[in-house]
Image 1 (tube, one colour):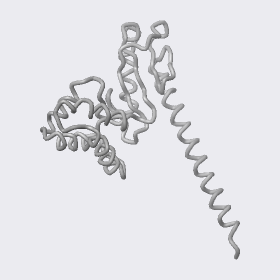
Image 2 (spheres, rainbow, N blue to C red):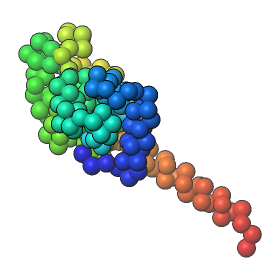
Image 3 (cartoon, rainbow, N blue to C red):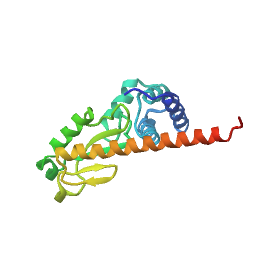
Image 4 (cartoon, rainbow, N blue to C red):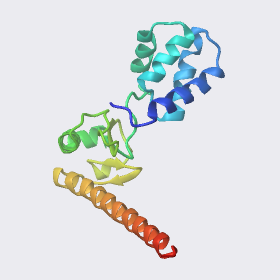
Length: 186
């Protein structure tokens, strides 16, 4: 995933601050990675490189630990986090089809984030709503009995919301410009 403007500098700054609170022994690796993820929401490659340098270990060792443990993300979380339940009930009721629909519609695979960082897609074991299967958790809001058609409806809701926010921001900007021009003496 490409970094956004100014993001590399932020990653370097945040990782540097985290490294200052830890020793340089190998046993610090997991606590450092945990703290990086807590701060940034994921463990970016530049952070892994800095951790490897600080601990004087190969980058592949940091990558290996990061990919081995299920708790670590290597992609930034999206603004909207979609979690498709794959518990037994959801799987039997078509959860795998729902996941496939999200992957096709968003043009990403499970575990990835859209390039605009609007959505991230995950598979989860069970959300505890088996009677509502298949279930999707979008930003901690449960969507019940999700079908392929509902996938489009769910995403359309967020597209509309985004367009409304963009219109509102544009209108506010125009009002601000109008007020600045109105206050000037000609």
